[in-house]
Length: 323
View 1: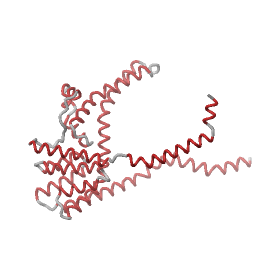
View 2: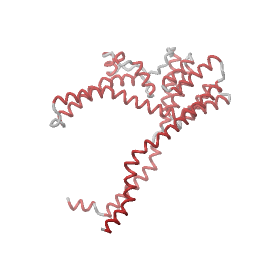
View 3: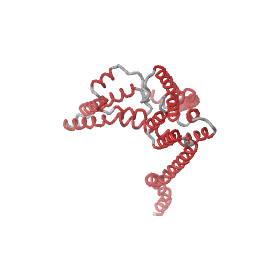
View 4: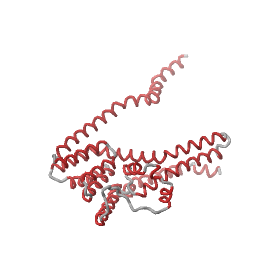
């Protein structure tokens, strides 16, 4: 065993392993972008599937007034449990559906799985906490404490699916918010060049996909709904509901008012684009102003001791030599 260990610790073998690892990392860094899937192409493919389904529903005369963009009803085991336990009423299915839409999950299957997770997650987390404290931590955790830990696990499991979904919604909204001002500028340019609102939004969706895939997806779905829904106002309101952002809501309100009263769309978009640019600049200034207080504690913990050591070490060494 010692001979094998000493053979592994030889400098020649270590240098060979490091060189091989560096070569593998170099090849991987070059090949990784080629092997990576294009998220924009994947999301746009799902949008095209939604558009094709809208066309089929329009041909068959299906009612699209609600514009829920659902898949076919799932008759599997999860759906049977959801229907048997009346989970739609218990967990407010419409509010859950709106939250799922904001996360980019629009199908009925996603709603069924989410409602199912709201039931399974508390049981699974509570049972795991009880088994963990009863086996691994059995010597240090008394029986009464195990029940309390299991109860806390049930409570945490109840909120776990909602927190994960809310985190996905937050990340998606952050992506949309970062590209929304640029999308408004592009939409303003297209409208003022003489394009109608549908081709203008379609062009913006195609261009903005390089910056924010979720925003390109939502604008593409809005174009599809504007083309196949009878109520254009409903199609624009669906964009606001799917994003859940006040910036988008204000633009949707302006577009609805422009279509209703015949006011110029370009003027409203110009004002809104300027407001969004000002809001983005104010947000950047706010983050810049909050940076010094955030850096105070790290500087005191990591920078100041090092500075004191560098300054005081020569003096201490001189004093020690003198005495």
